[in-house]
Image (cartoon, rainbow, N blue to C red):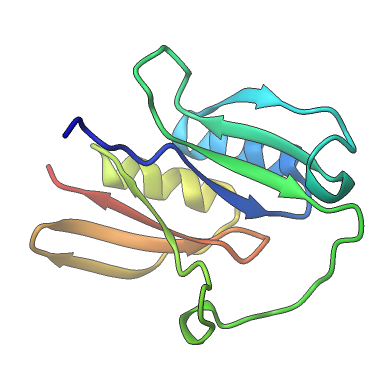
Amino acid sequence: MSAINLEHVNITVDDPDATAAMLNRIFGWTVRWRGQSGASIHGGFSLHVGEPDDGTGSSYLALYRHPEQKQGQVDSYRTRGGLNHVGVVVEDLDTLEARVVAEGLEPHSHADYEPGRRFYFHTPDGIEFEVVSYT
């Protein structure tokens, strides 16, 4: 069987452009694709952000906005099918944490256990990221 890789995860956010810009500043990602407003499912808007698309099949996040967005807090860990967090592997955990703080976000749940060091943070949309380093 050939290698199987995760291509993308699609997440609903309030402002895909603002979220993509924030993730670019934190992780160094770029917008890989931008759809036309109203052309995504249910008349929404999507863009893809991640590592530059250099043909190696790197993964990305699809950021989606529905035209009739609803607000609501859901405890994803208690909701079947909830997105608990997005894990990102980095080489320099301290630099990434400084970037998170520079965005006005609060790192939490620091841990240093096998197989690596990690911390978590929430975006303004409530999406939790786990940042881990194995070096």
